[in-house]
Image (cartoon, rainbow, N blue to C red):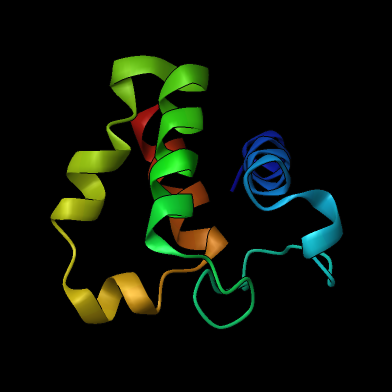
Length: 88
């Protein structure tokens, strides 16, 4: 796990949700659905930020599309960090 990737994604989440909307520190175990209560439109915004930061080598949309609905619901920040690191 890359601390710089976690830091970058944490910043993106703050940008999407607004820093004041994030009550607890974001960790690898933070759940997008349960902890952050992220909506699908916000996930799209996050995907756009990921693409803007890392370009085509990190295809967030294809990765998310390949997940089951249960996997998307249980998605954690750590899952996204691991995916990004695996692409870089």
